[in-house]
Amino acid sequence: MMRYPAGTIRAVKQIVTSSDGLVVALAMATLGFALDWRYGTSARTWVMTGFAWVLVWLAAIDRVTRLLPDVLTLPLLWLGLIAQLHPATRTVGAELAIGGAVLGYLPLRALELAWFNLRGVEALGFGDLKLLAAVGAWLGPQAAMLVLVAGTVSGSAWHLFKPATVRVRLAQSFALGPWLVAAALVLMLAGPGWMGWGG
Image (cartoon, rainbow, N blue to C red; front, side):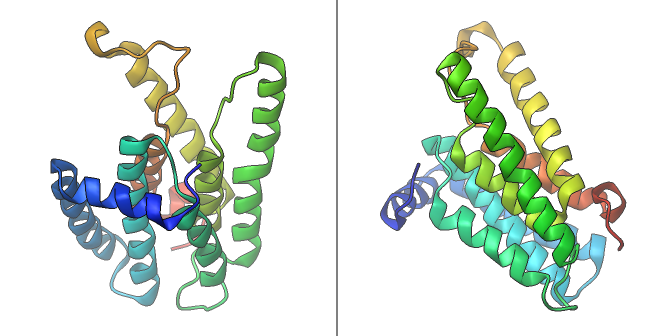
């Protein structure tokens, strides 16, 4: 678990100085235009774009380090809840944001704990749970569950069916964060109807 800013700064430097940096920049620019086109220019779109940009960085950091830093996931969760306090930046409203954060974390934490006690291995990292809680705070409980299912299924399928020369054994962990982020971004671009909240 990467809690301290120094570890995050090192990961960001590694990304910026590699080809991943170009991918991150292109993804951020594309998302900015796409979200503005999808939702129109408004304060809500601006904060959603900021949320999407942080998600892109989290995916890149998780891909490189296999860690989702608390220094990004926890503020993202709180900012998602705070955004619900003003009508101009509200996405799902305070009640659904709180419900989404709780649904994104607590049941999965209980499941992870049960699996760990049963098998002695972690099914999900704590960073993944905090990321899902942040998604729930910004996009609501329906989105949190859709992101979990889509991200887990697509990530598992990729690692199961990719070429044997680069296949990771099922017993080994893989970075789930990028798959969760991809699912969240697709859902945001799909529109409010898919997330269970009004446009």
